[in-house]
Amino acid sequence: MRENELAARAKKAFHGRPSQSVDQVLDSPTGWEGKPISDDEKRAILDGLKQQISEMLPAISEERLRKLPLADWQVAYALRGKGATVLRRQRVRTIFHASASS
Image (cartoon, rainbow, N blue to C red; front, side, top):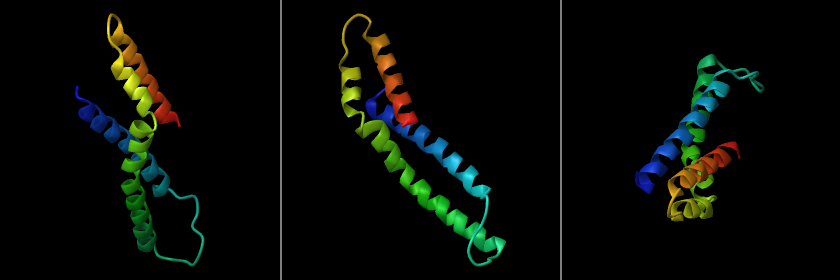
């Protein structure tokens, strides 16, 4: 798999999960402060907020998954020789887990 394909798949995965979590949180707010507004107005506000957050997630995902651990990616893909595939897989998993948990 090419690096760009892997990055695209990872970006999609990292964007999808947080986006779903944002939707779940915003779909059930614990309260609403301020002046009273209609349910339709609340929905419009929440939908706009979801949209803004969703637009920011790809850049955040790319930063955390691709740019910050760039040196780790380079080390993982520079491995050569016997057993390199297994070590590379372990390093890639480590990068993904570290990026997802930070």
